[in-house]
Image (cartoon, rainbow, N blue to C red; front, side, top):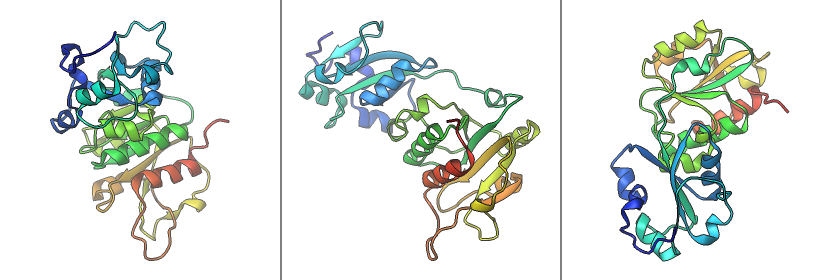
Length: 262
């Protein structure tokens, strides 16, 4: 459907996106760029409200059999709609699904590896963790209180669609939720720069069911979260360096411990 008027009411989900982001969580979330829009269209958990883009950008998407409304605009019209210089060519509005419960990740049998985050407020870091979790075959990501929204535009963009592929669960009962993981047979490994922690290269045999627990940069994990862990693990870094970015640390730990299927 061609779009000429930036004020077309059908485009409300896309209008003035920078201001909309500052207004906080909305019923719809926005995917940007062909890769993430394509991932959203293929993700069974998410309902797509509509797709908007230039003709050239939309040509690269498999939309022929889709029943989703598709709006086509010139680049200058698209820029006026979203409220900033947009160069990724296309966007899609997705409907937020019902929140998943922790039980979704507590399958009773088999090898599983999860990532749990505490107080990671930066959307870029949450997105980076989800990108790494997807790349290394993690089975899910747990978000403790205060973590950024994985479907926030920046988080979703940095995740490269990982937030649409790897299940994530908000755990409000914290750190009590970690006790449920242990009761389900998970071993909890807290990532820390503490030199008294076990070097990750000497971690030994990886348990069948493992949770990698990470905190925000700077403050790290709370005392309660550290106490809930079965083992503290560190990634060796050069002298004089305080710590690693949390998404980087998650990627290194997952590469070492997740062992995704070939």
